[in-house]
Image (cartoon, rainbow, N blue to C red; front, side):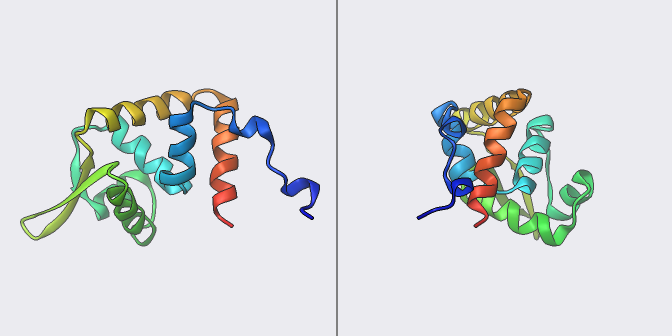
Length: 124
């Protein structure tokens, strides 16, 4: 039988279903959150993992695999230009709207607590 602290709090699932799905299945790390915020704030940028790591203050060895995961989730696009892999925010309007809704929701501390709960729960 699970311990009391292992039982999910029903309040943690009280989120917009699209955003709940996003944090449960696509944005599964805090590095990914930072990267999504970066791309949301700079929607026209197309750059290498190395530069993105530098802009976000993170280690390239951590950023690059997370960018690849975001590309598999169609949140960012990866392409090779002049021999370098570069990343940019997806140009899909629905994805951009979802990212914008996520960033906006992050302004609410209750949402952040709930979303953090799901990321941590997925780490196990």
